[in-house]
Length: 350
Image (tube, rainbow, N blue to C red; front, side, top):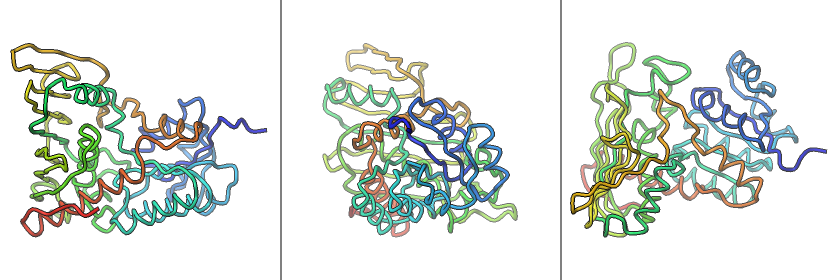
């Protein structure tokens, strides 16, 4: 008889996010068992199963038909997220979906309806709210450590996905509009939009965005069809204004920092210091917290996403990052894209 505390998982998509985070984190979780890998690259699926366990699946249909599979991690390109997630849920399995949740809000609503009807868990892979430093930052902000909040500035900038992806090169699917739908806004922006929602407990009210393609090119030398930089101004529903910069053209060290300004001082998270959080108080005092770093493309530490997903299944509860979180974050991304196209402030329609 199978141990009811063991969750058998198939990882759909054998790219870098699966190889660097999902598969090793499932392998390390005592309540998870890797049932296999589904990837259209059969050699890759076979190699990953030899490393992490399980069997290679040749189709999603084969995964869905396997009654011994309890859950599926969707690590495939963005355009597949909604279709795959809905099929997984309707087959009676739990699902973890990488960000962005889908291509548009029609898809996210269909995913949430399928989740409701199935009674199964659907979690989104927004890992930044699970980073220990961000959890500590929220605790400090909720306690009024820097007073009333005045402004925020969040960055997520690195050299681009074309060297990190499992199929590297200038024609990566990340640069193909039909497969990715969004450029840096969907890739990196999704993380920080979810983070500010988490840190402040407030949704985004409106956005003014500027998006551009500064440096990324296809192999033939033409600029990619998607934005490689995005600068966005936001107002939250609680009145807090802020700005974010997302970039695939940061050819120095990765910048994943957040600065939050308050009436009593400034909070810097993964800023210019070796410490994870630094409070620079109005009276000149510095308070430092070291609670755990953040994952980077060069330093893949445990994300917390897999452990939370498995715990939610085992405990029969809602995960920390829900389908609604993914939906609301995508609503902001979609509106930011339209704002950049129209050159004006736009309210978020959830």
